[in-house]
Image (cartoon, rainbow, N blue to C red):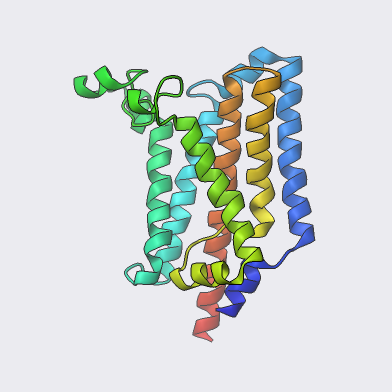
Length: 235
């Protein structure tokens, strides 16, 4: 167990710098695109475009990797419940990203869904209750809070407070390793500052792409660690 704690909570300055520079480079490229060719930036971020499809793939693979991690460690044991739920959650988010294939397969949303969906799509996140403009449970606010909590606050609390760290180890909660916190922090800062300086709906799609990128990176980390632990147990 101590090895798990060391892997996730030891500060690796090289990894922190690596993911910080990579994320900042992505943001810088997208900002240059926005200022020099806004039309291409919008094409990149609009529905059914590169950003949305990449977000779908990132969330899909994040779900697959988390579930694969659980299966390697015996899917049914209690300690895998939280990673398994997280994997299922990301699969649901992936489905929501493409409205469960509505435009891919060309089917229409049922009348009951169409009537209560602000975009007439077969998904949950565009229901009137969660509408980003009028809903009292604003979908963007909920997503930002989820990422802030899981991508920044909990990893830092786990690093500074030993009892928090040991609690998460005990329940096998997949805390984001410190090395990947910069991805989520930079994405949140981007989503907070850029739209206020240069308002445009496309910025939120780019922010969500960065979120998805961060989660797939974390899922790959846990999958690799499960293979390492599995190999150690076999020796």
